[in-house]
Length: 479
Length: 95
Ligand SMILES: [Zn+2]
Image (cartoon, rainbow over all chains, first blue to last red):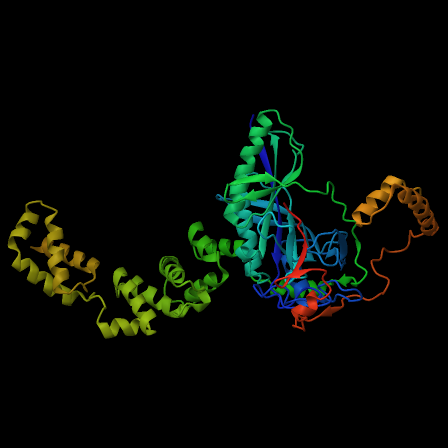
């Protein structure tokens, strides 16, 4: 039977702050265990949490970037449960009045636009880290450095229907978090985590099937694989008449499959209630307007603008806007007004990106200023130098830090486009090769190419090939 | 508001409190009385009262994102019944 997959996602992003959500402990990754704790994040009796303003503004920024409704008053709740990585035995989170709700994200998928609803955006504290030394031992170890780190939770509506759609959703969302600077999104450090949920229903049915949530997925490509696997597994199960029940499954990246997560506690009962240690937060229009004004142009609108304004293709615009710093670099190069956007785009995509990858650096650290790259693009575009020469000039620019015009001048690389200089060489070559000229006159069109080589050689490859062709044709016709 | 012994046992489980069956029965009676006492508040007309989340009347209390002091690790671990290699040590939570 054909089924339709219904896919949603829960996203957690650790926010880019120096300190934790409610205390001044550092959030730096990788410190020795339990060296970044204090009475507040250890949950000692009698302490009071105080909200980190930057963390709250980061969360507000994302809520607005995702077109959420932001209520004038928001507050925090206690989510009560026992687990050794949660020293207070409750997590300060939001439940009754989330910071943002009913938003959406428009994303390009395979040439069309898909709108994914955002159910809510809220701020909470992360838990500590549990380590389980080799199995068979009777203990677990707890590191509370991460406990209390500001964590943003984003819950999407189940608006996606295929693995490619959740792939696009994750990339678009990560780009928004990077563009707005609220998170470094390092998935390998667990600072950005996606938990997809998948259910299947017979094509055409309105009711949703049993919702299966997947945890422990460490990268975007692993999420896509996990979703593909789950669709296959559920299809097989339903086809063989099995009844699926809602559950949480863990992704095993090594085996490429999900396994049921057996929990001791059957039903979650978090007994949320308003956090009495924190006061409510009023978000007025002035504050919202200020945060909105701080929002950069977001990746998808920027991509569409580059397509329309600069006449770039969707692929080029997509590559350029995938990284805010790269897009900034490209746009400053175009703004230099020296070369066409298309020519600059080709240089950035083919050469700058390659060099960035080779050197493992960010566009911000790229040693050639954008206006100099534009000058190089212009030298090629106007025919002063050829494309291959341009590449070697770029290498020289990287090595010496000199502007491209200077390198071209010093090395005498400029193409000869001056007709009078080339025409003398053409005439010399024609005089020296009477047999080839006769062949050409007899109708052997291939003889033409045999004449280009000697001309290029005489000019040491610096003659503009187009001019050479034109002049050869002209002179031959006159013979 | 009559609580059942079963409800009391569930709440005790959530709070990780060990409660005998006999005790759960007794608590059910006592807690029901407490709830009835609190329930008197339901008699007040609150149709004109806006909901509130906090009794203090303050709002927007923040701290700046500036690093403060953390505890030395020995201090952080001092109250732990067990620790090992700088970690808190707890009974194993997964198989
Ligand atoms: Zn702390």
